[in-house]
Length: 415
Image (cartoon, rainbow, N blue to C red; front, side, top):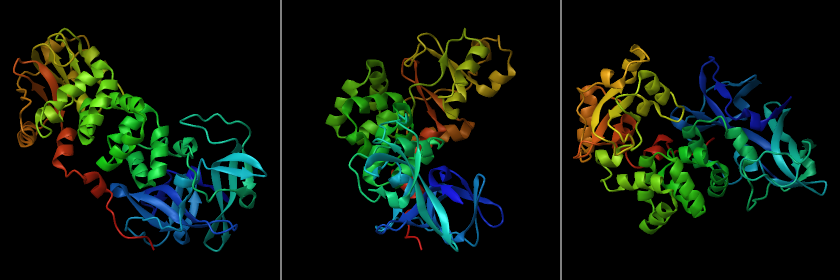
């Protein structure tokens, strides 16, 4: 039975009791000479984004949409050894030679070659070099060839491309893809990040540790980096710019669209650990003459996060921050209970006092906890709405700077 490795990405992994413990993220192999590479095991992502090693000897079956193993799984974090390769992360998109022709690796197939022994025996290739970015047009039919026919799979290539790897990653949530990028070698991480579209890369950068974010941004062309910043939430873009050298941050701000840059620049004037420094400057804002139906249509938009969509803020025109005079807010649960034709001015809550941009992190935290709020409006001295602080904004600032790396728990090597 042949198992095509790219199709294993994201497949659920179940223990002997039938409980799901995680998902497959990669396959660990060793390349030695011309012999088919031996499969050592699977990289499995378990709870808390920890990646652990599951030896192939413990895998009892590859079923439809599932991998089943026996025994116990070692919970120490997977650390790749120098003699090992990651089939998905490092070998897809490699440019190889088959029968004197230039080919690109689309997938690898492994087969059981002995009792609890698996090897890479087949390679799926397509004529030509790797496509760039997200382009998936194939310049000829896919060929399945024996491993022995392929030359160059063990080589490190300067510009490998990432289109076929992204196919394996495309169903991941941004936080999971960030974890996958974090665990890739530096060269491969940059190749994959560069191949993502601006929106996807913006979402992933918001989930990466500071060191990875800076590394990726420093390798992008300035115009591309500015485009990505424009796709980020203004508060996240402001945080990233504060991590860069001032001269680099100023250069990127100059390349951004004026409206987008203005939103970020307004946030940069506030200290990072205040309401002004934490807030998003793009909450959902509508005038009092808008209807409940219009409000629900706005918060239903896919790109709006749940915490931002929890409340609609009501203000006098203009309704882009900084708005006209702030009037109140409408909770989404209240909107669900009201007739679609009702006006926001008649259903808004005026009992929640907004906070000032200078509120400290502690003050904002206590305010949210006291009133059981998902978000709180922020107004300036003139009573204009300038943004909103959400629960996830507060959590990001309460946790240590390296919490994303701690969350993935560095540890020892695999057995």
